[in-house]
Amino acid sequence: MLEYPRWKFILAALILVLSTLYALPNLYKQDAAVQITANRGSVVDAALRDRVAGLLDAAGIPYKSVAEEGGNLLVRLASDDQLRAAQLLRSEFEGGYTVAQNLASTVPRWLELIGARPMLLGLDLQGGVHFLLQVDQKAALEKRETAYAEQIRAVLREQRIGAQEVLVRPNDILVRLSRAEDLSRAMARVAADAPELTLQLLSGSAGPGFTAALPPTAVQALLTETINQNAAILRNRINALGVAEPVVQRQGDSRIVVQLPGVQDTALAKRVIGATATLEYRAALLTGADAIEAERTGRIPPEGRLYYMRERAPDGSRIPVVLAKRVIASGDQLVAATSITDPETGTPGVSVTLNASAGQRMFEFTSQNVGKPMAVVYIERTPEVRIVNGEEVRSTRVTEEIISLATIRGVFSRQFQTTGLESPAEAQQLALLLRSGALAAPMEFVEERIIGPSLGAENIERGVKTIVASFLIVLVFFLVYYRMFGLVTNLALLLNLLMLVAIMSIMGATITLPGLAAIALTVGLSVDANVLINERIREELRAGNTPLNSIVVGYEKASGTIFDANITTLLAGVALFVFGTGPIKGFAIALIIGILTSMYTAVSVSRGIVTLIYGGRRKLAGLAI
Image (cartoon, rainbow, N blue to C red):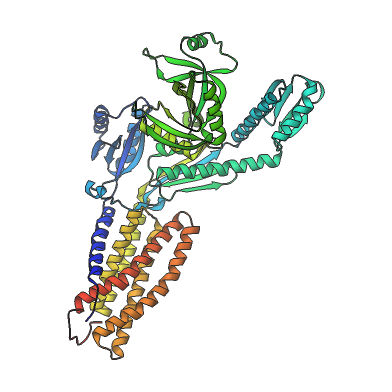
């Protein structure tokens, strides 16, 4: 008799049920949708929902539903009406709300509760967004020169050398000293502290002083480092967004290409990609009536600068505060940042951890200023595009506001919390930007394209037709050539495909056109394994072995050959996954999973089905093979 352990039957049945459940979400198509997100000061409520529905009705645009989902207002439409609805709503709600095209899931709630979700689709299947960004290398150079200027000022203060000015110019830094006798000592100390700078004495009647400049090789290295750093930071931000298989690559000397599969909300993508948000911690010099008087008269202390609170006064006016120009710590000195909710006040915030040097400065400042106020300044730089006289004008909007002004109650250093943010969503986004780091230089969007899902739908349809056609051909061939064992093989192949789709869905893997090719390839590998088994059984029958014994020997001898044949392909798939990027990785994932599932279904599942059919027969005259 054929033997097959009962636990293997139970395992196969369990795998069949789970594979069916977790592959099921892939049958539900996404709805074309328009997503409306509230900007600061706006809300998503029933009034907004009714207004949106009224606008769509008046324009004669049919819609499936208008409902609040995930804190946003989601309008589900037919794909042909998506662009028209987005343009209508964008023109109506510009400023107060962000309107973007999106794709909305239609998977039933009960499937979502067990963690079932559809496979992620690549840019070639689902569409998405394509950005081409220009890195502002001039700003990067100015930023580095400004940092060197601050470093020179600090060196001169430490050495008690008087300086009339330390000025950043287009190609160098001008340093004028108060006394000529301090010149040699100043240049020696600056050269020791910043050896990469080239120092030159001022000539003629320019007075005692010198210039400091980066040599051309250092400038070129800086520009290369800037674009590489921006690309790395963009990858971190996009990975934190959860976009599957993004493409972030350098193009030329100053551009970066970003492709985000499945993302239709270009507004969110641009905010996260292009925005530079950070925090600065500064001492408060004047608050209350003193700050209001300083604003009114314009008499700001030379070491101070005027800022405004995010919160407004009861009459709606802005609240001024004069802060020190000197920064105690800034966002680029953060080691970690996590969004939190203050347990005492319930307000959202960010828990931050500074690096060692910034932590030491914070410790020294708080030790000397207990009982005095310290402000947290939120700085955000957002790229903007305006149409002026029919032409695009690109600019960057800088927002600087005080989100927290609190009295220092005790001494702290590296770890503390910053509260005062408007919403948990803002806290999460700020934590994300702080974790991923500040961009080394600003970037502007040179090119922006939304790749619609229509081409992807055609690709999917062709890919599915290819797989279905190959399956049908294989199924018919096996039924005709191997008869009953052909039916067993077909059942194993179907379970193989079901398992492959289910596992890729659970993993959140991305399927692309190469991924569809990998699935078709694994079908071929699975066919190959089943052919080996069936032919082994036929050889044993021709050798005069009994039918039941031929089945046993055929599976045992073929299993080793199947393993050896697939292990080399599996290693090739692992190499593709480790060293490949984008679509190549998608191909490798589908190939690796397909090989593992095909070996299991061909060797174990098909044997279990054969055991169910022939295992109970003590006397078997022949096999339908």
